[in-house]
Amino acid sequence: MIPVTNSIKELTLLQPDDWHIHLRDDQALATTVPHAASSFNRVICMPNLVPPVKNVNDASAYRERILQQLQSSAVDSDRKAAFDPRMTLYLTDNTTAKDIEIAAQSGIVQAVKLYPAGATTNSADGVTDINACVAVFEAMEKYNLPLLLHGEVTHDHIDIFDREKRFLEDILGQIIAKFPALKIVMEHITTSDAADFILAQGNQVAATITPQHLMFNRNHLLLGGIKPHFYCLPILKRESHQKVLLDVATSGSPKFFLGTDSAPHATDQKEAACGCAGCYSSSIALPLYATAFDSVGKLDKLEGFTSRFGPQFYGLPVNETTVTLVNQPMQVPTNYPYFDGSTLTPLMAGETLPWSLKL
Ligand code: NCD
Ligand code: ZN
Image (cartoon, rainbow, N blue to C red; front, side, top):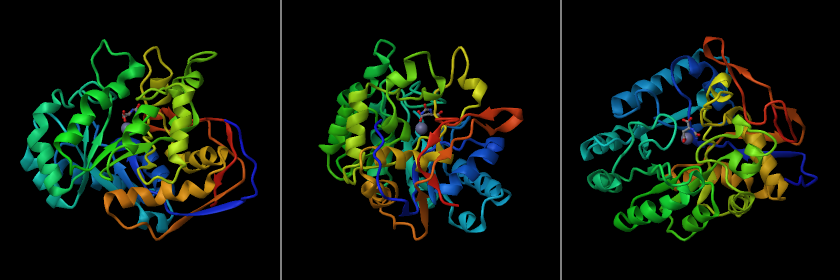
């Protein structure tokens, strides 16, 4: 990435929301909640807990645990007041149209997440046959509840680098054709194929993009030794895809918005013979996105991506609070304390970023 030197020293943005985050549960929340609350107002909390968040009762109990953690943390009182975790349901083979109706009417559930079974971390209970979801998708369409997709096929014989593209071809096109009014977010897109596909759809179809997929490619993951902290799913792709993602994210198109996919795994679980998938970024997400946008001279497009297009898609107002980024270097911590004496290593641990959050 070629840094562009510019004269912008400070950048005040409407407060961003994170439309895709993993906060995990219980003791993990002591680390993840203060980090998320320091940058974001609304956060869409992924439901891939063990066991998953499958119904409104699970979702409301999970939200309570997050809020309890927030109250007992050292987060500023104004950030505490602004932080607003929004819940998702985890779609299984047993989810019914009635579950969707109850979720939509609860006011607690913002969206429904589909993990193809086996696609990623904690997805064993995911959907095994999308054709069996007709009644559920109809209900989501009726109640205007967005479908959030982990867009990868899972068949063993399909190459890991082709799984997103195959999902577009084999699955997503069909869902859109059969449920034309269903709001869909293709989460954490990683390919030019996905970017082109999303651009070709109506306004009801959008995508989130993570900081790692804007800043890195598979060479960063694999060249000169394997770097487990760059390993996430969908896996980083080649540089040409990274460039297209950066193009569309910084284009001002409202179809692409912020979703960090910040996915904590303890350091020893990542730096292992069989390391977990997921990059932890929420504590430094805004400096990362600013660095990515700055690298192509598009800081003027940052606020749309971080703070306007997500609420627009979900039919929600933009936030009233603001956050300021300063063009002052920050060193990313090498790790954070995590639970049971473990640590959590963030993306770009120990490296210096040109942008930081103004405190
Ligand atoms: C996520 C996780 O750890 O929960 N991992 C990841 O690599 N992104 C799951 C997911 O969003 O795929
Ligand atoms: Zn995720």
